[in-house]
Length: 283
Image (cartoon, rainbow, N blue to C red; front, top):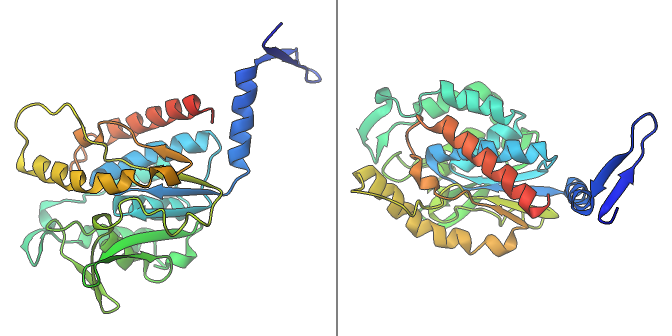
């Protein structure tokens, strides 16, 4: 029959495949044989969306050989690079109180302290060495003195993650090695630069697409969130042409940067979106 192929396997009945199905299998196989680089944007609690994306990629046998991340993307990247599955990381996030009233400080440059994050990193990264992760990881942070981005891929993992996710006003600046750092997203919210020459297939994931159907008056926190990402998103989208695959689930700002109540919904949403996108792209 025109447009179909028959495949016979010993002991099995003949199976019929369409040309599109054959092409899909070939596309998946081609990516699986490439060195894949995965870049994860920041986004606060929206970083959970990266887990849904990674799970969908894994189900298509797309696994990164090198990672790069900013802020929440760096944190997710570190846990994944250490060997934790998306579902395991999701469970860790559900069990951890990131913004507990105990950590509320309202002084010294930030609303919250970082003790919860330090305890989390000490528990899951006991050797505290970036270079000892199972998958190479680059962590982006903003050097506020030099006004540039620094990419860490060796040395103190805990300090690198604290610096990368140090959102201005929310957390106090992080100082180590004689420098002071703030959130990596300020200068680079999609850090493709350190890995774009180290892979054959570059995947960028952005979890801050603006919700374009905002109704009513925004709260102060929503206004801060929206303003911050209006500033950042243009620089993110300038890098899309350098990605072989760019995953940008729409309307992500409907999920809070700070609230965990919707993280299960967010995980499922980005997972379903990525599965559909991969199917549409023929991967």
